[in-house]
Image (cartoon, rainbow, N blue to C red):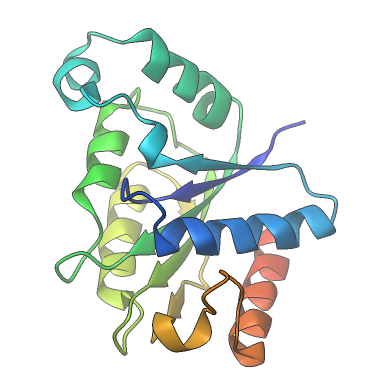
Length: 175
């Protein structure tokens, strides 16, 4: 049986993306769903110079095997970087085998300290994933004003935000 893979879509250490990814992981585990988190901090530091150019490293190959190849549902937790999504997630996708995401399913969560919750970045990433023939779940959830909805201990301090995330996940489980 495959896992749902949550991709914390930045390589910033101790990121808010990873905190949100862990909250999503906890919720899914509470529903007895098999789930793993891929923190892009795990990527080899030189993967963009090797794996991009068909020089597959053992470490990157093991990431593909564990997190991508045999799984069919992915949740991307995407922070806003310069009005879009981080370049590291695009580079990661570009280094994967061409059909890695074909006919698989994606759920998108945008996070930002501002008002829009990275809605533009979610649309940009959605376009990339759809180009790769991935089925993107319609409920793309922007989480805005992150500093006010996430407590210092990494939990939701907003019941309405927690409910919105749980509702998104319930829908994605049935997608």
